[in-house]
Image 1 (cartoon, one colour):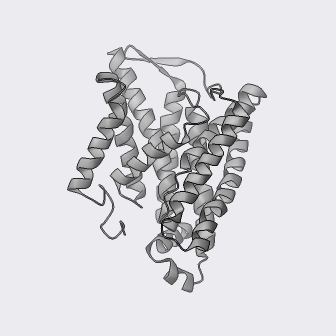
Image 2: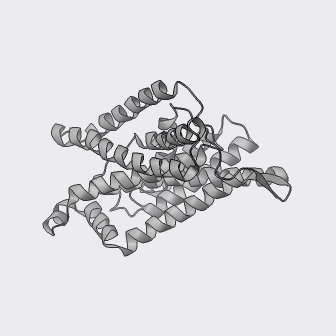
Image 3: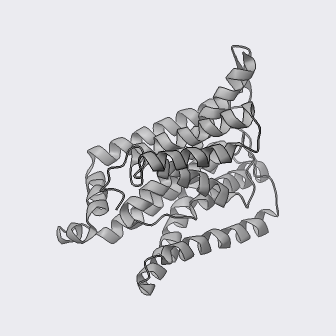
Length: 290
């Protein structure tokens, strides 16, 4: 029974991680129709700053969290310009692929230089583990799962109940018409990048004590988040969340029950089946896909 509990806990926290990354991708995609392949670099940024603040300089977790949030906000601002400016200037529809990958590869080089291949593993917020039906589950895993649920529910409610959420939905639907009502589409895009970066960086900070994070793994996390977003449906917040948990749970179950070489293969096969049955994803409407 202990082994099953460990597998379930791993599946849930991986699901929470991928759901947060997919949520971050969806937030920026909704206002720009751009898939940010540099999303995973925000994740590594959060892990790296937490490691630097806590493990290297001995700062408490709350100080590290504040620095992660402030740094991620600045990172989001800078990356928005680095990604969106070339798109607007080039006029090429698929310029976003080059610009987002350029940011991702640049940041991987920066991280490799700064951290010199170090394993970015800060101390957990709460040390120790609890016995759950014979299985030892780290307190940090409960924190990751709980924080993921709180962040996802909070953003979903903000999107549905606030003027910011209404502006984001309007921008996603028709940015040209939205601007005629006095809403700053540019401002919505900037805020979306900042919020997206902050959420993903916090995920990196929370997960790094229990999951191995290296300076060059950003694109791998982006890939899982992207698959989760496509499974759930492009532009759907709830779809991104559901897709994240589907990817995380499938990955953990297959890796533990079959073998480590079959996790990603299974996820891709499930993605292919879902797209054959429902090309827009599980939760997005056909209109949203366009």
